[in-house]
Image (cartoon, rainbow, N blue to C red; front, side, top):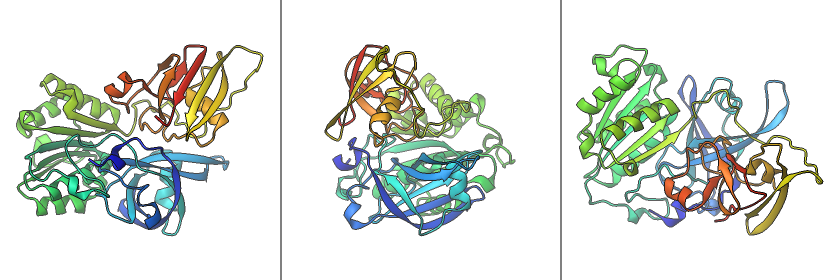
Length: 385
């Protein structure tokens, strides 16, 4: 893999022009951003990574606010462009606006690509195409649901094109055929690699010829799929992408079959907690300088920052840091994307949800600042680490 594309570089926003908006389904669009030559280095990426988008939009009451949302890149690395797919979420401010109003010519702030949902096998970035492993025989399997297809499609396209010895199996769950994103692109992959790409559409609300491919994927159906369709003992790497319940179900099933956790890559599009609102600008906190406060120090872009956080407030490190530096990197604020990752260099914290950091990152002191609250009087974190 390329060091440029996969290392945890400092996430930064750049304003890009929307070059094209293409309708995928009634509730999903593919958005292509034009990347000028001067920014190609900032937008190098490895298939499976994502970008955060930032836009000021009115909420349901008409109040304009900054909205940040993360979307996976759905295409293999191509100079001069970044493509993402945006599926409308119920009540989603950004996704609804994108599906109803976004058009070519719009300008949107796009964060440089990041994310750890990438193969541990040799793949490639935009600036290092010769580095991909073209010799080793690999078998990859992906289980995706809905818009979870976006990073999986980029990964499948890349490895199938680069290595004639690669096999890729995809189990793709949707409600109905009309909801299938990138239907033509998936069919094209099947036509192009008939012996190496196997596509299994599972539709929960449509009857298919095979009962195994009809209905919702529950524990019983998943066991049948893994026993009859996929040879789990021959899979080199798994990619799971979709809602929390499905991803966790597959992880648990693979664990019972003896699949090592290190061979399973996963990314969540929701945490399974819809009642928890997504953060976007940080909640207001009043600090009493003479009161009982945590002292939070942070390093960002080589500069030191310091902010107090009232012990009675239960404030996250991210929320506190945003009051001192509005450019502190974050996207989902829900423990899913990992954009707010920093290294804890002093003090102690309690981290809530963590769906983004690998275990070795946690062991090395990295935290999600959007989910971490101080438990010691003084805490120091480094966003540059």
